[in-house]
Length: 153
Image (tube, rainbow, N blue to C red; front, side, top):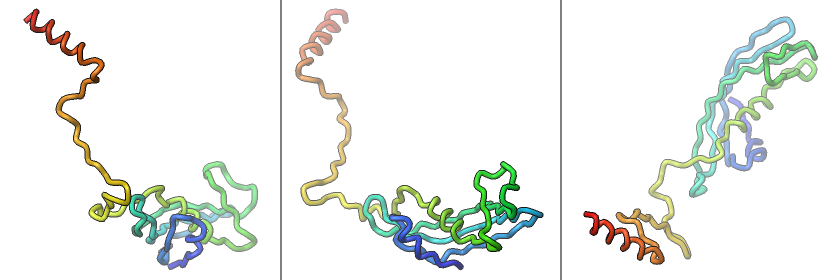
């Protein structure tokens, strides 16, 4: 489990984050270490309608290559990671992957709590009329067409 409380300062929508479960494996070659990561956890985010807290569960899988020799990597990867000295720190990568997974909007399950009235406003549920309203300026044309149908029919 990894504690990442700094994410609440890095992303404005993240209100809180529980400890994150990070697991995976590493594959070694002569000049590369590739981490196959699975990151799971919960974020508390604001509901897009009510701004109430909503728990967002994430489950991220990522393949992260680290090249041990600078400049000796192939173009098969979009993102190239290089170790700092003799250390490979996965924490910044985990933080980045979580922040990229935060949705732009999230809606909670409780729609009954949605406010339908406030000070000076209310939600109106309008049903379309059975017959379209005719512009009063064109009402004479409607009479003209009905007279023609009577004459022809």
